[in-house]
Amino acid sequence: MTNYREILRLRSQGISLRCISLSCECAKSTVMRVLKRAQECSLSWPLPDSMTDQEVTQLLFPHAPVAVYHRTPDYEYMHKEMARSGVTLTLLWNEYCESCRNSVELPLMYTQFCKHYRDYVTSTKATMHIDRKPGELMEVDWAGRTLSVTDADSGDIRPAYLFVSVLPCSGYTYAEAFLSMDLESWIAAHIHTYHYWGGVTRILVPDNLKTGVDRVNWYTPVINRTYHDLAEHYGTAVIPARVRHPKDKANVEGTVGILTTHIVAALRNQKFFSLYELNTTIQEKLETFNARPFQKKPGSRLSVFMEEEKEFLIPLPIHSYELSSWKIATVQNDYHVSIEDNLYSVPYEYIKRKVDVRITRNVVEIFFAGNRIASHPRLHGGYGQYSTVSEHMPESHRKYSQWNGPAFRAWEEKVGPNTQVVVESILSAQKVEEQGYRSCTALLKLADTYSLERLELACARAITYTPHPNLKSVQTILKTGQDRLKDDMQPIKTEDSGKYGFTRGAQYYGRD
Image 1 (cartoon, rainbow, N blue to C red):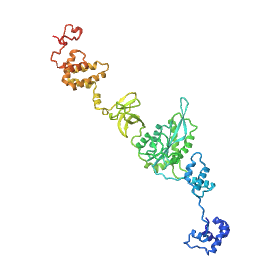
Image 2 (cartoon, rainbow, N blue to C red):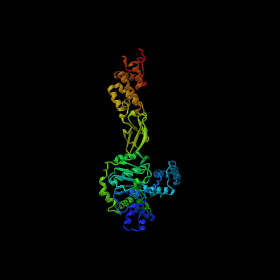
Image 3 (cartoon, rainbow, N blue to C red):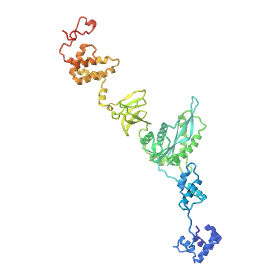
Image 4 (cartoon, rainbow, N blue to C red):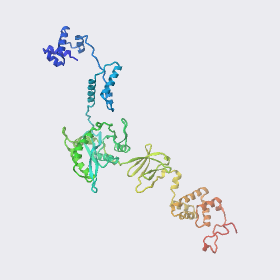
């Protein structure tokens, strides 16, 4: 739009028409026309302070044509559409023109359409510097380039992956090589980082790799259970970077590029025969890197960290995080869950329920609905082992489990000598003593049914029948009431009894 006010001001200072046209970026004829209209309207410089540019225009050219406005395209929509396969600017321009015709609006020409879109794309790529608070963020990532470790025996070369973590405020960096990028290495790298720094940041920013994030979601990503436990143990929060947004962790991305040159490329011609040897060399390179002075500001990563950031880190917990794994198990009918072929008890009320099991090197913890319901020392060295807590058992099972050989012998002594003989006979009749525990338990139940006195009498009667009485004989005597008979219960002695052992006489069969 022509600046009429400026033309009048420059002319009042005696500037030539040509210079005025160059200064105001308009044609010389336009300057002549404006000066002529100003003379006709008796308008001269200086203009009144209250007169606006729009009033000047209306005074000079009251019948000037109204400017034609073209419809502005939706550049944000265009940018999203351009990311789709097969979509071109020509296609979008044709759709834009069709939409303008339907709404009786004037579209832009194709060249202007493309120019404005390019300007929009350029403006959306603008970046902003964000000042990070000390001790607030830790950014982590794996380097793309790998190192190598040579097997001293076979000569095989194994790749070693470089883990990198950075504090954005100071730029202080930690790096370590691992033989794999699995969950165990990922967790160990974080633990070593925290101990190297001597503290923990409030926020942890990883990439969307599977060892850190189970399910990627724009708003609520699902963090890996073990990774979440690590964050909970150290009192930090995991906020993953957005998908395809590397600038969410720009500091570690930039540091990875620098360390690729400073460490990976610098060690390309060296051979390492163990991971320990490789990491020792990496630590030497890392110390040099952190102590190297900045190019455009005073200090180094190490000095800024020590002076400005270290005191703001969250203190480390007393114990380091212990790596754990999680699985889902179903409680069996015997109120145990099977973990790596060993069995661990839970309260019997959870039979047939699905529970979460946390497994560490030394402990097995069992959770239901987020609450821990059982904890056991982890069983090692065999399969089919049981770890059972008596409080987890039903009352009836608990009573049964408390009886063993010493317990039965203590009970038999309280009942009487005849019962003691029967119990010893039952236990000694088996190859393994434990095989007689059920019969002894049944004998206990007989005492509850018939009384201790009758049980003692029945055992005495059974001893007269056989030198090796068993549970069946005692049960028969109690059912038939033979323990109540008043006859002589001493065995009949005959002259052949020593030769043939115990022999039943006429008294047993009811004859005189």
